[in-house]
Image (tube, rainbow, N blue to C red; front, side, top):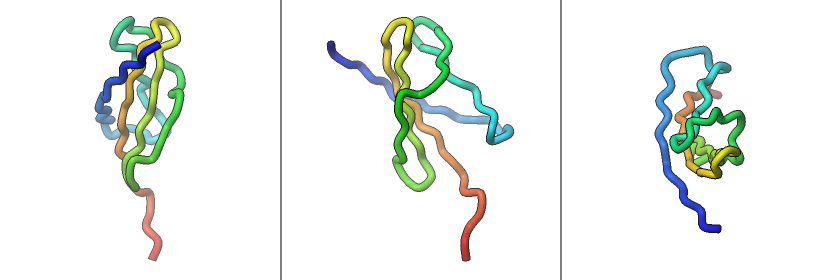
Length: 72
């Protein structure tokens, strides 16, 4: 089985950091509940791997995070 991945950018509006809008599959529009995997790309960037349970389509989203505080 060959895998096809697409990188989708997520730009979150200024909302409560604990709330997020979960993606839908770009192929079949099924709701996604949880990412299959995640990885730190850099100190302020996290990448998520999503795979649709309905059609099997896979894609990656990237999310920029802001540091909550700095240590002196």
